[in-house]
Length: 309
Image (cartoon, rainbow, N blue to C red; front, side):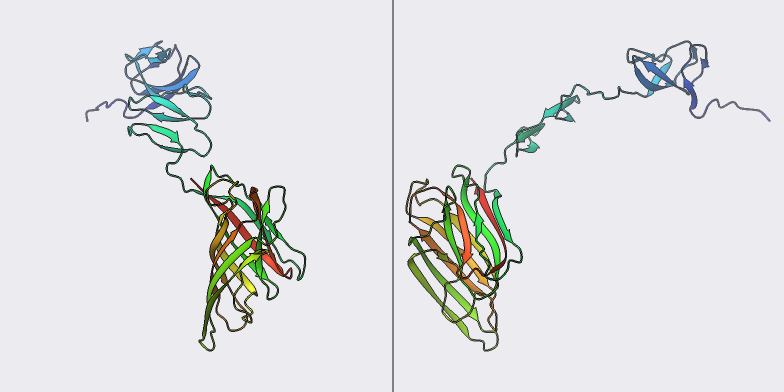
């Protein structure tokens, strides 16, 4: 039977290239050229033919099989750059942007850029406070001093819940710079509420208000409903400077929003709309204090947010 020589049908690893070794097609060697180790495959029979010089393959005898790179090669990139290929197929780098910027496609849709998010309205937490399992009748004032900025934020919001030991009234006073809590008789507020007796089905609703008070009352509704117990949840909006803009405008600093009070007994949680103003002085406000008449706060979690312009 005749014998047919098919030659090499797969690569043969010959190890490190040597000038004294005779190589044939499909031999694979490793060779270090200018400090870079790469793998090559023979495309012709040769002896003493270096696989490459200064990064250029000896294409008459060898082709790159796997081209190496220097350890720690920066590929021309600087620190804090993101590598990507541009429209020309070249590797380039995008330098890091500024704080709070985002990475996006540019307006020409042919590259990337860092930019400040357009629009505004981003909600940022700028203050918080909490109470965990405080004793009954303990002296407990909850102070929140957020980072106000009329140039950064156009609106502020307070979200929280307060758990009371006993029937009581949750109150708020403003705090001016230096930490002074403002009492006096400059708080005005009006409320409107509705609640359901889950046993009788009876509905109680109404509203009340008070001017020249010493604080804002978040639970100032009909007497005898015993609504101050358990958890009070609230979402309130706050304008810490007077209408018209700027801290120098005396009238009026404003608080408004909704509360929901989970009562004891047979009453369903009471929803209440609240609206309050303060016109006591023109000083810049630092924050606010939450407290009760009888120091009955047990647990609380309050967050203060600013909405960016």
